[in-house]
Image (cartoon, rainbow, N blue to C red):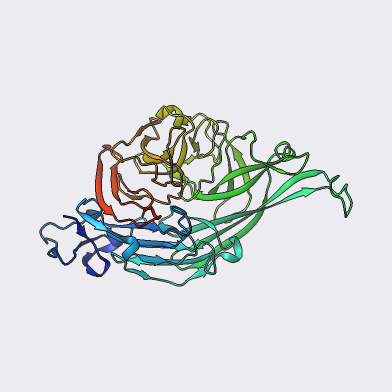
Length: 456
């Protein structure tokens, strides 16, 4: 029999320092159980599940975001059943909220996306079920990076968040006339980057900078420019911040945007930190895809180097490496097509643990078309051995929508994730990246047209 975990019935038995806790919960048909004091669950933590409600179309996630937290023990228990869409906490956001969690899982950070509250930063103490207690003050970063910012919590002990935005303007010389500009000649596209760092603990703005971002003269003359940026990541030394980039192109002869063009080497913007000054652009000779990712963190520092996924690479996605010298390490070659034996691999979301292994969501040319497009699989990868293997214990469903996936919860070598097709029930799964063991956990109760976007 499923054990329903309802928000108003959560029994929080112990909340230890750093958010470590244990809890038992029940509905009317199950006896409430107090933890045995002789067998404390000292290694427990909160796991927060995020759910995106349908707006107008199945899987669009535009109907708002709800979150619901359970203990890691309950998250691993397949007899537990949770229904965030019915009992969850509504996170302020016009569309899908952009969520981050503290390293211990005890705090949720949110920046609202779009609408009247777009760009507002809030944080919450996790108290179990639908109980998320607002803490600290709100602050808006909209004046600096707009009401729909791309932001990430930096891995600096939950101290800092960074948000970025880029605006573009095509530039022409004025060979034409006021009434006929057809003789105007395309010169380049000006890409202006805005970046803001946010004190997550005190809810204040640390620094704001704007920069004009240049590619090489040849690349710009050929119509290339940086059109989107995302996923700021600190290097190990804490003196540089890397920002992923997507390239677009215009036809220099006409000034019109083109969609089918030769991909350049993957690029990343590098700035001094914490000053956010002196932007430079580095280029990979290995990968030829974009590095901005989408909803999930795309780059991570491990062992002194930063590992970064790319997308839309004509050879299939790569994991790229940026060395301690703040340049791409082109001796490191890890191609997902080759590692998995597939074609056109596209990394949708990934998360490593400290042992250099990671859980990675991907799609490929063989992915079936579902209600929201071609969907994906999970793989266990090893960054050192440069190997990848599909996790077959997690079921594949064409309607399992991963493109909007935002986050995995990491606890030591374990990675918690959500799997549920659009509009259908699913489960939490826990992958031990060291042993490869996969645990099928709590049931996720879904509603029509909606989907789950991660665990935190």
